[in-house]
Length: 238
Ligand SMILES: C[S@@+](CC[C@H](N)C(=O)[O-])C[C@H]1O[C@@H](n2cnc3c(N)ncnc32)[C@H](O)[C@@H]1O
Image 1 (cartoon, rainbow, N blue to C red):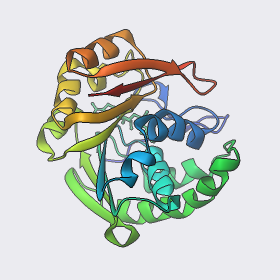
Image 2 (image 1 turned 45 degrees about the horizontal axis):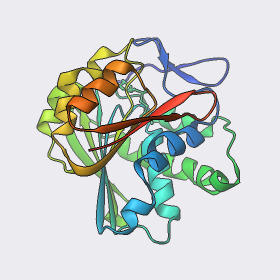
Image 3 (image 1 turned 60 degrees about the horizontal axis):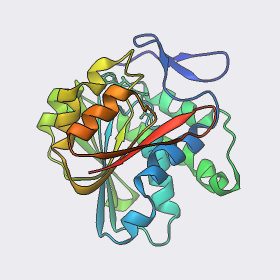
């Protein structure tokens, strides 16, 4: 069940199934931090909590998970436990997860420390990954303080299956035009069932249909300037 990742000449990982890149050509970590981690109000929001839960659609190469884990690890005021719950229908090989964080990025000063930690964290994830199977499974890292729940299967049934109270949501399917199932109203509704008042949500897409669906589901949505080369990103709160 290993999904083939095509490594393009520019070093970026590409999906033949969806004809889209897993991440932007450069600055993968910077994008993950800006578009997802910081956009959901992290690290500050987890500082006032004992336990904090992130729900993601599209685990892919695990970069958002690794970026969140690295940011949590580097934060002296981090919460006691970080739960990261993600859904993925087409898991990649462990080697691609490791290769992705070795690819050259353009970290700024603030990110250099996190960038330096990614290969070691990716190796830990890759070791756990070897036992991956279909369905819902949990992996523990950082002496049990970081818990990854991975639901391997199609997004909508998996969202309906998992038990999760999300404090933050990362929506990271491929482009809505190329990967409509990840952004359908039914999928977003299944995601929203795990949210509560105050849950923050972030995405790189500002597609009108996605914004309208989120608004219908009770999210207050804002279109924000993206980190170049991306023009926009989306922030929302329930
Ligand atoms: C842009 S990539 C995710 C990148 C990832 N968040 C990261 O940090 O590396 C989108 C992911 O969504 C997954 N995906 C696409 N359609 C899906 C579906 N119907 N159900 C579950 N996962 C799906 C793809 O296999 C791909 O791994």
